[in-house]
Length: 185
Image: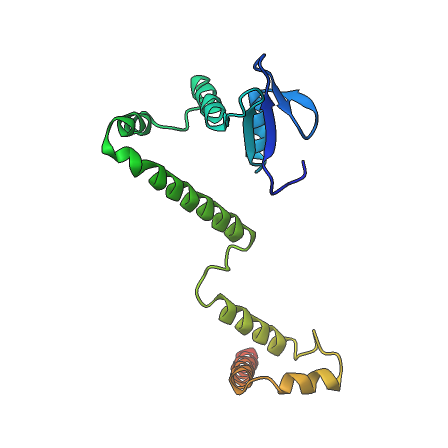
């Protein structure tokens, strides 16, 4: 389904049937839940009165899922929600819930991002990658990515820190090769 910045308009007829104005067909509560899971905003309007019924239908979708044993909301949370309607806390609860779900969404998107590149969040990861590249270049004698004298000149324009690291790695490699030669004898 194409993503749109406008909410999907669903009209409720007097017969209580729900009509999708985009596709010109009738939909069920499960269809509406599917639209929402796909990231689509939905607005449900009573055709006769023009009243916004979105909240009522979203609560009905949640109630149906909970009654089928798809328990997302723990009893304690449900109890606290009921209490919030009878206390002064009801003014704070919607803001708290909205912020909590926003934090959850941000956490989920960061987790997905980290799963795509798990090492990206590690401090110093870029430095480690640079060291690995320098080591590989030293091990291969710079031949793996060498494309002629022009590329070598560009490489020499790199910072002095990178050149000194490369020289240090080369000297360590030479020392290791020297030790291996002694061991063979």
